[in-house]
Length: 199
Image (tube, rainbow, N blue to C red):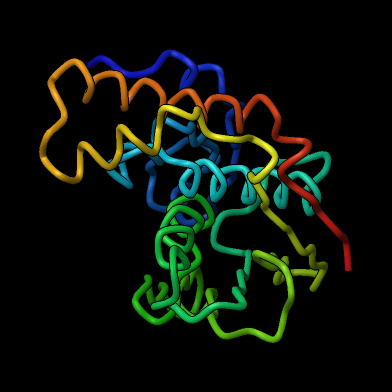
């Protein structure tokens, strides 16, 4: 499997999942998510997928500063509706990592380990997303703004040629390389594109 090598340099997100422990999937329910994991799940790597990963990473660091985040015990809210823009894409990535879903998720075992109803859209917030620990109600707002990481000037004309079906094979490869370079730079500048505020 070949992919951009910077995927392997992205910080790993460590979680503890009580359900996976009970069902014998991972010892102590401890495992990790990598950026490569979410790229496989999304089927692509882009500023939106990268942003969703970084939003989740930084929110969980703030909520669980000295321990693994507890998967299935985190509520996530979005200002946008599910159908707006890229809200669904971001929601899917965050759901993949935190386990939170709207109404479609796991219903639990004898009232425990439920994952549904932990993700809400159309929330009364002004941030990109709000994460809340359901055990202590601590919340953080996270804002993602990648505008400071400008795309390569060659990207737009190459995209136009690609959409028109007139791009050569070499130009298609060049476009993909340029596209992933911006994603790489977003990770390299994560502290300037992500803002976390404790509530």
